Length: 568
Image (cartoon, rainbow, N blue to C red):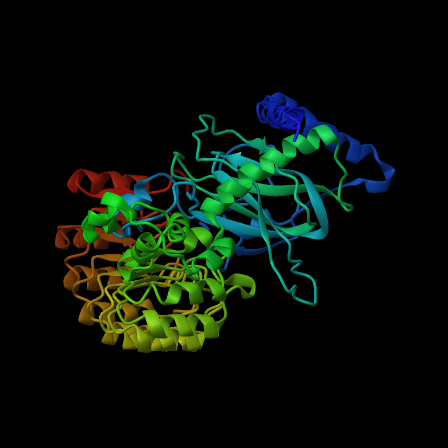
């Protein structure tokens, strides 16, 4: 072969690399201008006119500040045109998540974090919105009216919630993401992130938020989706830049929620015989295991493909004692659980929060997994897992005899009778039933048989009618109780209930009675005198507890943080 041809090949590759580098190093301004050009062209083109629409409906969310029986401060306020914007301030007509700042993670009721949570997953809450028409998004605006800056990720879904025929495949694509950043101003703003172009139309948008850097609750008024009906055509220059953007996002997604591609890798492809691993073979087994403990789950999957030695370590059930699958909610399904099943026989902490919705996980798939991997489970997180039904709770009660912590927060599709099965979990120490349909009869049974309970959350459990009976049962059976959440549960909570807690639950460290109307300062004083370990008391929107009463209690009990919202 002539020596000219290798030289031409080298020059061609060098030229290609230069083009790629030039595209990658394009300034943010150039990229923004390119996106603006596309948007401008789509607006002016009569064949593909831009559609601008507000959210039609709020279909799912993880939490909200308001009550289930009201519209004030609830996520449902995000549907439709703005109620407040461009005004700034605290308005009841906005959507507000339940918490802000870091106090939530530091209070006595906080759970310990899971190991192996990827650093790029920092979402704390979410809300999903539907729109009338499916479009290819060109822009998305979030109208924030108070303490902005909580939104950190925006995703689009390929499924049409209004279609009578469910799709064979559901895809979620990240339109925009960023780490939590501090916004110094608390005034209203129209948040306009530069979103990525996707190759499918959507009318289902998901906002994920992190409020840890906020000084107070963030308030959202409306979401505006801009898009075109037909897939936009972009120029060659734009393609070069967008290709790199997509590659970067694909890499991030591979780290964050790329379970699909990893499932096949994790199914133990046969590794051929190779040379020995040198001194690596001489390292103690425990030391290699300790090193691998620092890898995220996707990285562990990839490492398993390198050699037989590391494959053996990566598939060791000891690597899956704590398994956090929440960051991979967008991809996790029955196939994922099946591949992980043989490696999770010793799992003790399992987080499946946010997973399995829209048919990703079936009842049969979940049941098969727990029947193999449930015997050692101590902690099970299932927040917002809407695939759950009564059969699932029955399987949990039978297959997880050692379970000590169960989180069913915002599992609002579970039928009331399903909660009767929880009473079989006699070792429970933590139970979160926030925003569920648990009824009084089932709860009394749970309290009667689960006498080891230390942390109980009944926030927004509006199906419970008589809290006098509940308080009496707690006082009689749950004397080890340390934290109790009665957030907006029922306004029937009264002085008698507080007196019951003061007499029988003296180990109490945290009590949340936000929204009650019949609790007096005198009963709270008796509670504070009896419960010497109490460190957090939330009396926000308690009509009998005014600022003067709070100041007096603070003066008498300076070690207790008495939380009261800034406004009434």
